Image (cartoon, rainbow over all chains, first blue to last red; front, side, top):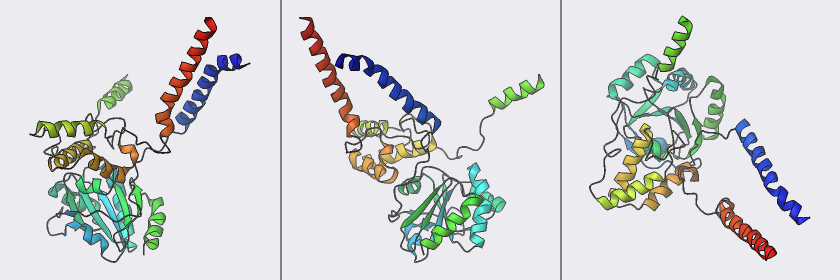
Length: 176
Length: 134
């Protein structure tokens, strides 16, 4: 009896392996890397202004008593183009949006804002991705809902699409 | 024919705007002057996962964010931080996923115990076989 079990064990293992492999190939795991900092305060950072005549962005600006949306973007990022009109819409609905421009030049950011509209209050320039890493963000665009105490309440990975607006507004309301 | 040629040409197209136009960070591809620190930094880079390409370590990756992560590792090691502290800082932000060396904890202990378990089972099987033959 036990001999038979041992004889069939490799076949059973191969079968189990195939089931797992087929299942995972059919339902690949999510590849978006989420920040683990939801529910935690934003780490201290201070960025110079990305565009002349505009405020830079520091972590203190994100703990000023009012919930804000922090958008991480770049002028060289294609999905950010698609996101721009949605951000303008969010601003019209009363959302305060602060921004971090990753690995960007002043002229390029200014040009991006002229072409795609400017929904931002302050824009910090993160030339070496350091603030992006401090936030646990792994790409552009990403957005964080941050409450008045500077605590990250919600992270959105990728561009905010028109169908995500309701979720963002609800999270902003929750952060109030 | 023309359609096929056009399709082939499309295959040659590269994304124009997938990267920034800034040069890599100062310490992304330059060794630290202190050889010992450079070795420590290199060892850490080899076991940190690139957040963009996901299957490569930041030591191997050409992604810009990987370059910035290498620069961060080198600068922090030069400033006297231990590799352990830097890894913990990254895990705090990106989860265990960011390192190729999974920590031993209840969720991962089967991963660490499996080779030992298989070795013991194999040894037992072999022992029985050998004894039976004699």
